[in-house]
Length: 232
Image (cartoon, rainbow, N blue to C red; front, top):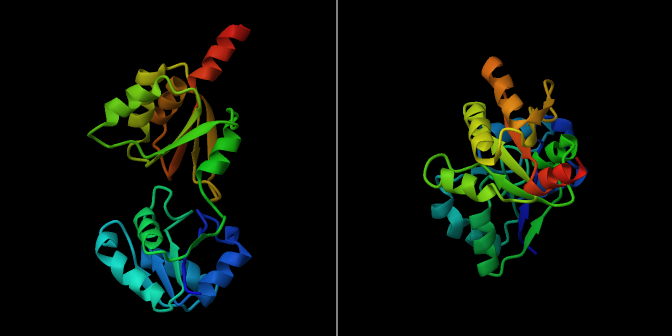
């Protein structure tokens, strides 16, 4: 039966792809890629020659029905993002929702995603957490930060090197500079690094050291702070 299959791809190290993911990509009738140039590197590395088509935030609204029509006509379709699991801060949600509405089978493979290794390496509680992805760049940003000031769970954010310092400073202002946090960058890559401390000390580090790479910020919730105060 034809279906949509979400295929996680490596977030850095090409060796992190699963055997099952490679089998799906090799047998797919069509691979939808966020950036075909990026996905082509992966496909060439593993000798995969399946048809490739772009599917990104600028064209996904227009292409939904055509993709669904193709699946209904028998094309097993794999969706990948540039790195990680499709739909996690990447295109995928709209297509999945439309397939479900049209009663098209949807399957998701397990695999790489950046926030899990960042969370477990942070040293912060991982039993309860919330994934916030990228904060709004402009409209709604301060409102979101204010709402998170009372969040009890560990919080996870994605950020670019161009805004990571600003985000750390704003988190410190909203949550308190003494809030515990960690910053992971270039996960699975050669220069992978995780820094731990308070929001204030981490912001200070990046004032002195130009940020490079893609970042995952992990920030303690209020419950950890309250627990520390009770212990003291």
